[in-house]
Image 1 (tube, helix red, strand yellow):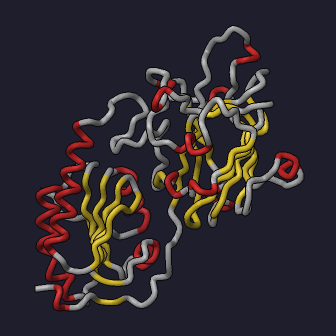
Image 2 (cartoon, helix red, strand yellow):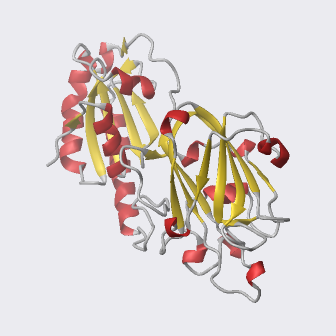
Image 3 (cartoon, one colour):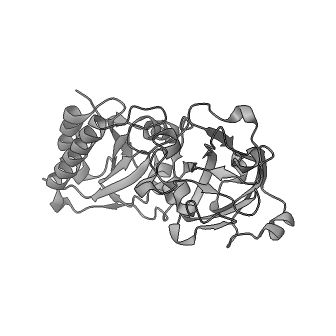
Length: 330
């Protein structure tokens, strides 16, 4: 038996989004009649389907937790939002017990299938999205907030992957059989020299806490100069409307310079965690990631995956709280 968790702070809710694969949130208010009408249905689903660290049911009083309600655009009660790995995936507005039952039971079924087929290998997450290091406490994987239509990658060797390859949710092939989808390389390498410039526009304004960069170059080769290097020095630029040219970037002070030491790379997953100066990455709608130099004497740099962690931006203002009509409740 599992009762819904009553949320008392934003930090508590963020921790649950991080620790539980699926989270169901019931946004309600004491003055809302339909909220009280559907509460027994919600409580029963919680009692039947709650599973530690897999499916967590929560209740959020919008009058006491206005910041959370505002962050997810909740303007009417009741509103139910389903989160998967910290991202909202389904919203139900109104006291509709039939629809709520359908959505939650489908979620439980998907969770069971996911658990049965979960990859138990190192670096695989319970929900199916590969991450190479621990998700920072209190924050979510927001990588999928990137806008694929605006991605640009300068100095890419065309024999390997493209910009969106870096954001694939699958485990890097270098940690498995060495072959990506359809046998193609699922990583990128620089072309004429070691530098790379990646432009990442986002669908909304984000708070970016940290980055995970995975680089898995081969250990041996015929010529050491031919072995691609891991990134060492990286310059980060925020809120540019376009990809920066290499000469242009040299003339602009970066928001942050990062140096990745050899010991920063995890020996099993080839991933380095980059903690950002959070105060400088509070309202980010784009990132330019400039790999200035690699770690070694080679001529090329290799990156397999990039994951982005933080908080999704506000979609719209909370506005006046409305009540869904009483005719929807019994």
